[in-house]
Length: 113
Image 1 (cartoon, rainbow, N blue to C red):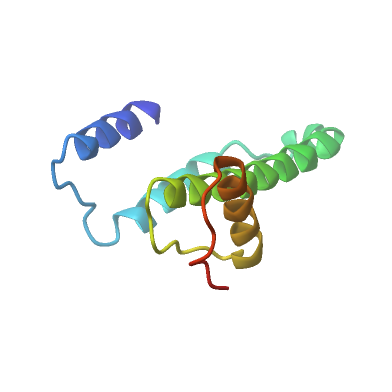
Image 2 (image 1 turned 60 degrees about the vertical axis):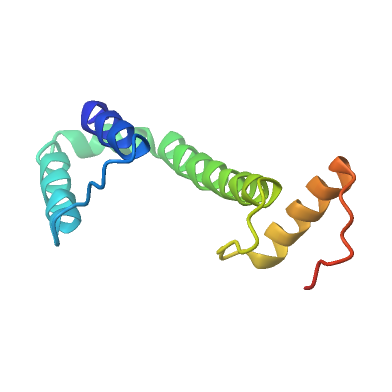
């Protein structure tokens, strides 16, 4: 899975206009879901139940990591000159940008909430 990810990312960074065909994402999700589903059997379920605390901890870590990453990327976008940033956590993103501006010594006079 990493090979296609890296090659498509590299091609896109080089400026080649690559787009997925309509519906390709949904088909890919079906393929991955079916492939993962094949590994679940009655023998696997008891083993998974023994690992549930670790599975939940991993899921919570992934959620927290993506939240912090989104704040960091929005802050970097503003620091790089972006005038508009689309985000779902507006108040938290605004706070992160204000902190970054304060650290950098940027005048926040034009900032509107």
